[in-house]
Image (cartoon, rainbow, N blue to C red; front, side, top):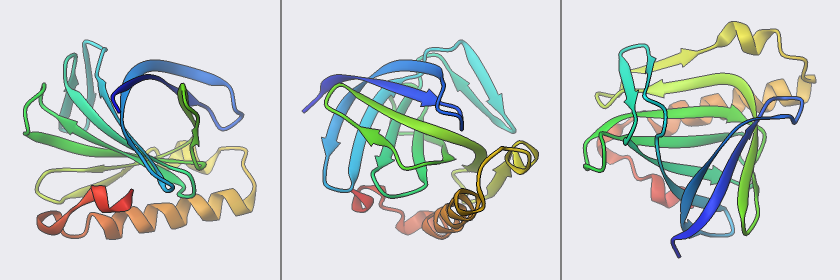
Length: 158
């Protein structure tokens, strides 16, 4: 596949806040897998540094309230972490993927340690009760997916 695609992150109100290019790796009736190269010099989240040149394998879903980024050190197979955005289900089109971020995030370290990020931002979002519940159910699903790093197989999600 490997077609160029635009990834657009939107806020909860549907306004685009960030966009970048990636390569479509695989698409199914469940979602899409994209590869993208991190283009910001350095972003630190807790104990993990995301550096320019790190490769992100990004999983987007039509019916799940999250996406998953598997972050590799450069283009090596070494996984730095998994970063998961709680968001509304993605819109996956031939030339772009967009998602509406709901602030709450889950960071998973290679040893399996999990950290929930941005709880306060999520708490004050102007979203309805159904969306808040779906995001929290998505968080629970993610925590279960990453319960056992040794048997983790994200490709089965697509």
